[in-house]
Image (cartoon, rainbow, N blue to C red; front, side):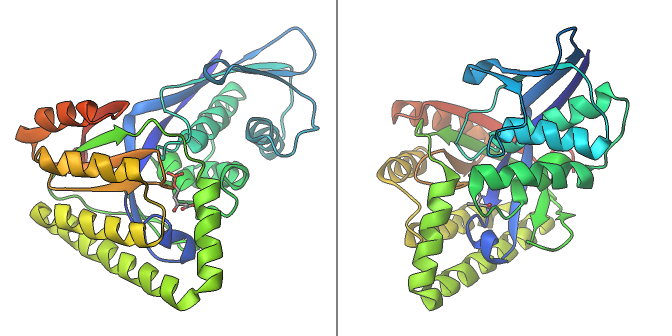
Length: 309
Ligand code: PMV
């Protein structure tokens, strides 16, 4: 049996504007993982079992729009291999919540199949394969999720450019609060696109302002001036509000977090649900964690980012 795993991810700054060519910063969440196991089976064909979403699929080549089928088929084609296989998938990463669950599951599958056939794929090759399934989840994805997850590094991402990892001089503590509301990125990305089509000048100006926040954040992280990050998160959140991808629930959690000592907070990912991230001093993390649960967060993860840099 061969196993492949992949991490979740969080976008620190720059979502949505990144679809329009602006930079964004994302980091891996190594403690949240998707796993795939591949083994030979005696029955003919390929069986995919995704227990945590209650799905059993017999791969028959008919569903070009099913990400699980597409990633298995594309990986076998790329490696030019075939076989009767059982592929089991499970994941700790909540679905449709901005933590990269779709890209992580696809990456785990690619790695497990490659391992099964004793083949090596580079992070870039894995990222390119996973991007194909991201199109099915997202419509017009920037490619940030598959990149940060395939490389498992802090990534400064610009669409169409080679991604580079960015420096985090001093690790930071983040609280990641799940609103419990599943929100498909496909929808918010589509709504932003419609807004941009109606009023391109206004949207381009918002994207430029987000790009400035990303540049300022990158400089702060590189020089260790973490005290400015809270304010930068708040600025990014105001701009995301202007794009109309926030929600009453997100705003409520942000207010509760700020009242409990967070230094800044913003939605992360597609928005209108999913996760809200907070920058917090380590000494205030427990208080923030408790306050966010009391304010209705479904779950809260406190994590350190940049520890390995
Ligand atoms: O919802 P997520 O975490 O998969 O992130 C989407 C990020 C967007 O910028 C909104 C879309 C994209 O493809 O970059």
